[in-house]
View: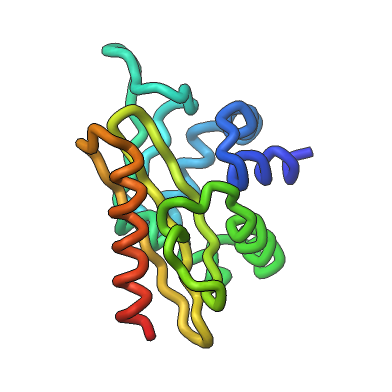
Amino acid sequence: PIADLAYLMIAVSDNTAANVLIEEIGLAEIQETITGLGMSDLQLNRRFLGRLPGPDEPENYATARDLTMLLTAIAEERAASPAQCAWMLEVLGKQQKRDRLARFLPDDVTFAGKYGSLPGYAHDSGLISHRDETLAIAVLTSGFSDPYAADIVIGDIALAMLDELT
């Protein structure tokens, strides 16, 4: 079922599940939804390959601004129906890779997010919630020769943003 594929795509970053969904829904329809939510720089131009594109392959693009816009739309129940947005938040909260934005967050803070990686790139985005405050955050990095160093920097940024939130 589609819900199982979406869960795998989000919670474990399963590219095969994401690609099945892309084939089922269609690139054009997905891009239309992205644009309809006001995200002008987020572009899904190809399936997920788990590697950088070849010279004749298009690239997917994302900006931190558009990713935080998407997360905010989900949190505010504007991305889909309230029930669908609640389900998305639940699945984002089950993200299994928690060594970037969620790395240093204390136990009383809730994190719901999605990460992405390619050689030379380490990204993470999510919603950090503490008490009655929620912050949408996206950190996109490139150029780290050690991907674990990027994970630490992303975690430090999240902790600094949490300090600003509280």
